Image 1: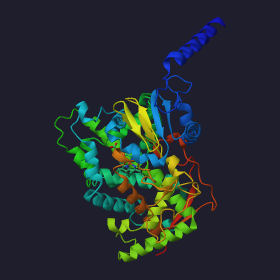
Image 2: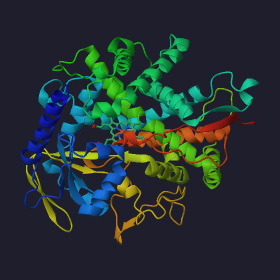
Image 3: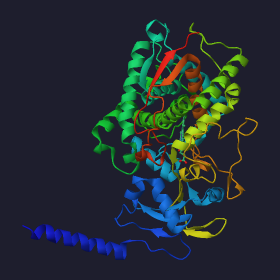
Image 4: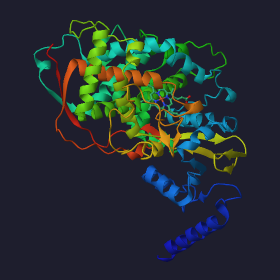
Amino acid sequence: MVAIPLTWGMVMVLCWCLWLIFGIRRRQMGEPPLENGLIPYLGCALKFGANPLEFLRANQRKHGHVFTCKLMGKYVHFITNSLSYQKVLCHGKYFDWKKFHYTTSAKAFGHRSIDPSDGNTTENINNTFIKTLQGDALNSLCEAMMENLQLVMIPLGFPNSKSTAWVTEGMYAFCYRVMFEAGYLTLFGRDLTKQDAQKMLILNNLDNFKQFDKVFPALVAGLPIHVFKTAYKAREKLAEGLKHEKLCLRDQVSELIRLRMFLNDTLSTFDDMEKARTHLAVLWASQANTIPATFWSLFQMIRNPEAMKAATEEVNKALENAGQKVSFDGNPIYLSQMQLNELPILDSIIKEALRLSSASLNIRTAKEDFTLHLEDRSYNIRKDDIIALYPQLMHLDPEIYPDPLTFKYDRYLDENKKTKTTFYSNGTKLKYYYMPFGSGATICPGRLFAVQEIKQFLILMLLYFDLELVENHVKCPPLDQSRAGLGILPPLNDIEFKYKVKHL
Ligand code: HEM
């Protein structure tokens, strides 16, 4: 009986030894130092996944600013010196930024490739994003979001005797509910015929979104969605609700979704459900980072009395300058793009909250063998390898951001209380010092809208409600590292807070 496991054990050890001798990559002349890890295929993935920041810092100490790690069968070259970011991004002609993004999107959302060169669609999706999330389109998005936020936060008939009492709720749960509902209405419009059913439908979508989003890191890591039955069902239900026939019944659908619905994509081989899955990808991109970012901005602001005071003064002044007043008579507050842009204190609060909670991974695939030239030296990179930046290293670098783990609401304000843009590393002014939205060709196309919607949320919270933490000196919740690489990390536990409609 003992012989069978023993034989298997010996076979495994033999395979592992053979892999060590023949299977692992050997570092060649001019290449960065290499960490193969001890597990075939996974390489260093387990250590990286457990705590990416510590893993990268340890390798930085061991190898210097540039090193290669095997992760899930890929060789990833990490460039960890923020002074080198600009140089890295200058090598654009050697980078394929689409490959990783399009493959990941197809895997997670269940559509075929959206790269026009694969022949399934003619849409240049990047152009669509820029055209419909920035410039003039941004005005209508922000206008719709401000109205929808007020619709969700301050329902009709509000305030009544019940709503003037303190309400206690988890802050993350609150931000999730409000931002999801308002964001969904803003992108996918309203169903004017069934107002009551609409709320139920969106709350149902919210539950499905949570189920699906929970397994998102595993999908990105390469696990098939069929392993997760509940998440799979949730994804299918979400996509079902975004089919053409359903969206056609909705009013005030955003330019982004309308353009994609009626795109003259005659060569498209996508059926209705597959197109709906690409809408789902947009829904995910618009919510997955915005929700935790909203939470951190609100939490850090409420937790810091100075920040709260400065923000309240700034918001009250902006409202006064705009000639508007808070009321509950159905006239929503509206601030234009320009007025929203002139709120440096709120900007600084949001930036600082995102600096502390962001853990995105900026990835490019090498199209061919090439030499990466940095300030101090050059490195040979092989075709199909990945070049990665992990800006959290920079965001928490004490040389650039003294006392980096402390929230300082005015960190991004200069001596004139205007937006500060000068940050230094090693005495050199940095071009890249704040990167929660990525960089270069893959920079988030929704970043301007994201900041405006978080700002709108904070403004409305300050204007309509009295806000308090249930526990005054509550500890900052830890970041959920299981989502490292995907963007803004959510809190590991929720924080109770109280809100009450203001006496006007
Ligand atoms: C605080 C909120 C947000 C953060 C931190 C964030 C961050 C990011 C990051 C890091 C990327 C990937 C960049 C890369 O791979 O280098 C990205 C991509 C993207 N984001 Fe955002 N995002 C936010 C909100 C939004 C919103 C509100 C929208 C749209 C309404 C949006 C739309 C997109 C899209 C469509 C992409 C994919 C672009 C492409 O692959 O071409 N994002 N975002």
